[in-house]
Image 1 (cartoon, each protein chain N blue to C red):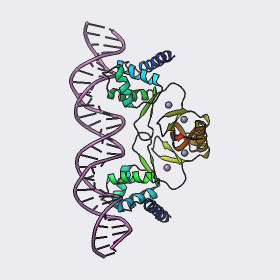
Image 2 (tube, chains in turn blue, yellow, cyan, red):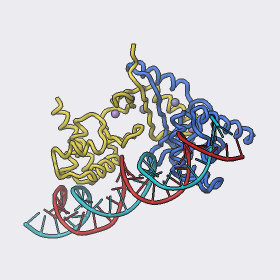
Image 3 (tube, helix red, strand yellow):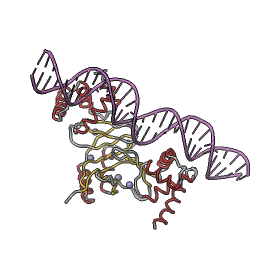
Image 4 (cartoon, rainbow over the protein chains, first blue to last red):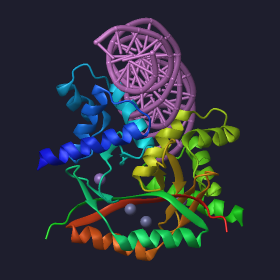
Length: 144
Length: 144
DNA sequence: GCTTTATTGCAAATAATTTGCATTTCCAAA
DNA sequence: TTTGGAAATGCAAATTATTTGCAATAAAGC
Ligand SMILES: [Mn+2]
Ligand SMILES: [Mn+2]
Ligand SMILES: [Zn+2]
Ligand SMILES: [Zn+2]
């Protein structure tokens, strides 16, 4: 199941690259596979280290460059949670926002159609069209 | 009116500093006055330049250091809008979120109790207590 | 005024990310 | 298949934003 998913995701990525007239290099394949499998939110260095296990010739520059180009193509998303470097995630499923556990650093995903709708309303009232947004909750487990 | 406001705000700041056992220096007074009057969201460099007009001896380091200490004391807020350095604002009125005009860079403030409430609900459902949050809308004026 | 200690300015250090350039690799046309 | 040229890579150096060490300065309380 992870295997099947990885393959299809990887192919999606290749489709994205090809569709954008970009080349499919060994290092891009490795990086993309990691993002697709992982399902988490690694930063550039984490991504680099994981990638280096599969391809020791890969460089941090390439990770950064790949993230930039993939972000432009809409294949990944870049997050900059408070304090800390940018983190990346594979864009496959629907949009979601994040809750960061201040104690563990865990990133929890959630989605609220009501909030999404309210944002649109607010923007409209102000005479604006939303291009993107960012909603992050920072909190701690409630002890009951 | 701007005069009266400035005075009271400045005094508030001094109270915050005094209360925290911090010293009220010439440079802090200048920086704080600028934030209180301005009502906008300058970054460290902008703050430094404005401050330098009133006190040419001020340094960028001091601006950064002052922002850090005031943030810890809750007297100011730090924002990190997409791309671009941290920006600061005086905390006086009630909480609000921001909409950034992608074309002009303008920062528009808004507040929605409904969204605030929904955030709480979501966190609660996930078993969390919100400590802080960040909601930013990025958009452009709608042409009608 | 004098003493103590926080604060400052300056320069150097750090952290994250980007960029210039020579070299390698992809890929599609032959 | 081979091959030519453009795109991508690795490495080192550059940038950007912010922090920090340290000697000098200046608040605050006496
Ligand atoms: Mn996510
Ligand atoms: Mn604001
Ligand atoms: Zn959202
Ligand atoms: Zn809010």
